[in-house]
Image (cartoon, rainbow, N blue to C red; front, top):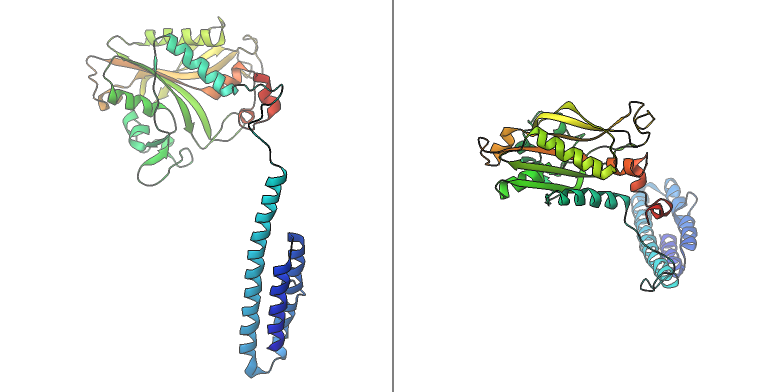
Length: 338
């Protein structure tokens, strides 16, 4: 027992005198390693008379725990000291102007602003909404039934069981706008959205711009004109635009919108999968149930909606084939947009 007390006092004294992490590791190995003093003491328990083993084992384990705790606290102190020394030696004055360095907008920001500016020029207002959304606005009021695949956990980031989630599209902003304002409405909703995707052409967080027009005369021809005008101004080209029949729970009829491949000029390439066409957005006439849920009289008003992924548009505008480069912060990539 006296030997154990002596080991304890010696170990605590050594730990207290340690001045760096490497020396602390050496002390730890000396006492707690595979052949350490405390480890060997525990191995000798079989040599202790039976009537003393319990007290001996308790004593050795108590000393072991005390040494472990002392090492842990000393390690934390040394790490803090190491960080403070690094901060003192590596300190830089961030207020000093950099020489020959010019910042630039991120390509996603460039694309988002270009899209919004075009719609502003066409008389659209810009509306925003929360990124943490309620199922009520994200699904229910958009005519998306409870058993729709879009609600599945593998697609949606749910926050809790009380109906809160990270919005999967900016369509809830359309709902909030219709609840807040009476027609006529002509708005776009840019912002971040979240889905469980992660591959070269998808990201779990990305940007969308969705638009909504509600008035007494909105129709498919009006929607077609707005979209064609927008795409020709965005890509600054006269390449053809086509509408393919599609399905969305909140629009009917619905369509996918393609533009002639801006990469190959419709000759066929890897990007357009040799078809000459690129899908760029979706659209459709707003389903009457969606308007009625927002208190809009469908005998007087009708509407159309459209939406696009900003990353998808940016990849086409800047000839980028992997969405991940937008978020890797590679300065060599970003300098290309200065």
